[in-house]
Image (cartoon, rainbow, N blue to C red; front, top):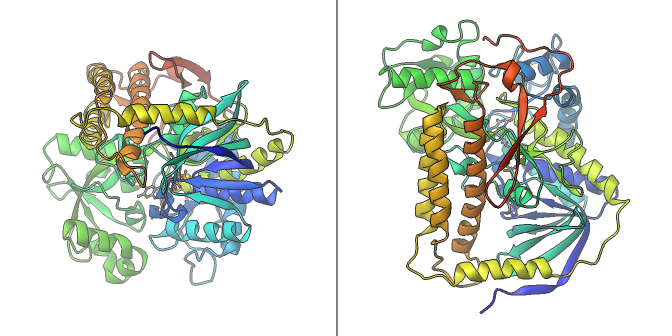
Length: 565
Ligand SMILES: Cc1cc2nc3c(=O)[nH]c(=O)nc-3n(C[C@H](O)[C@H](O)[C@H](O)COP(=O)(O)OP(=O)(O)OC[C@H]3O[C@@H](n4cnc5c(N)ncnc54)[C@H](O)[C@@H]3O)c2cc1C
């Protein structure tokens, strides 16, 4: 039976794809600008990965701090690849956005004198990370969600987007499956805002939720929008073994130590000034060197919080105390916990300008799926939540304003029918093909092996071959659930298809960049090379794989310097 296509077209001025922080903030702003706006999300919005953010959100609010200092730290953290106009906007607008969140109802922790508390984070010259204990994302997402209900933003939750619609060189809408019925619907919009989050699950293990499969990046890429800097993947220094679940940087921000098997605080050898609070790329590499040199404890190093005392741990790090107990059987008050670096964040994404416009007219992007670029080659902890609210707001406003100048073009369900045929073809394969889950595990392992913390030409070349092989074998994936109601087997296969395209871009870009910068550490090119590589990598889709181009980095105030912590 052919997959069902709904004939009726759903129309909104602006459609936001994604109900995490970036999507909700964009929708709120578009609604406030007078647009009729809808959010489409494959999960109930408050289950988006933003809900898992623990450590906090940055803004220069301190008496002696300044947005310029925050911007400098961000640019230095990025290993000078961030666009400095974008980083300046991020940091200059941060205090206003934090106060706005506070006024909306986010109950940030406070100091004794009543001002907002701020904890030190890696690579930051001042304590400037605002937090709600270690459940910051949870609280902010719920508050913004409540605001969007008040402002009557329509939501289509548990709807899975399968394609963008491009006509006459402009993005005009998207096709999404209502997962409750399996029917494919056409959304027509004068502006589409992508806020689909990260692609963490391209690697295994990852700190990211299982839903972080990069769908929006893949949809944009196939629709002709440019992706940028996809070789820059952040490995977080403290993830639990073997699950990969995150222990927040707040643990080090509050004073936690890293120890090797000999009990040494090894960071003094790698970052003598900032120690455990150097940038994430620096700390993760240091851990990996300790592990590879045999000073490991079963493939891990140890995080020690014991000296912080029970009171601090149980009030400010309560969630990770619980996670360490449940997942590693460790009581952080009295014991050290084994941790290792793990895939956490994708710096690259859909290339946008500072107002969220992608390279495809009518398509905007914000949050982790976008690359503005404020994080460059390495993101500072606490800057991603900030990016979602600052650039979510800016994208929402721009999209609403530009939508007001556009007209509906009366789309037909033609693209939905094409997508139905694609799905029919998947469903009609033999039941005895390869299972999606098996191929997904292989993909994760291949990325971890070939495009991990340290890379080289041989490994990345093998990675490109592995990706071609996986893409070929995807043609033999079969779906055993032939039903239409909540067919998660089908959705996983469509997600895997997205992940394979993105992984190919990631390894190809990594192989091409012959230098070490931020999170991209090449053993065969160990130095940063500003003459050759102070430029963005831009990837465009072709039927034969990605075509790479390069674009300039915007430098305003801060010339590249040697980066040490
Ligand atoms: C464990 C963890 C802790 C973190 N802690 C911090 C922190 O303390 N501070 C910080 O700054 N950053 C932190 N980060 C990073 C930060 O949380 C994320 O980068 C950010 O929240 C991403 O928000 P987003 O709105 O871009 O995407 P998400 O919150 O991931 O939302 C993506 C949305 O897109 C929707 N979607 C995706 N694909 C489809 C599709 N095909 N169809 C329909 N809908 C779709 C999903 O349903 C979801 O609603 C953390 C990340 C993790 C994983």
